[in-house]
Length: 87
Image (cartoon, rainbow, N blue to C red):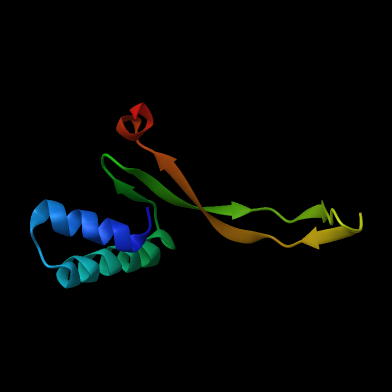
């Protein structure tokens, strides 16, 4: 399911116009994106988004076998809630 299909499903289930649902979904995504940079975001029934730090490491290019240095970076980790895992 992509964002458009999610908007259609929510609009069909709630009776709200697609444009209004699309605006809400966009704002939800933007708010989660801004907040997760500072602290974990927990959505009960869905899961938790956490910022994590990845260490620098050495990788290998599978085409050439050449070793590459992969720099440290920040990443996003999602942990599904117990209810979601049951599905």
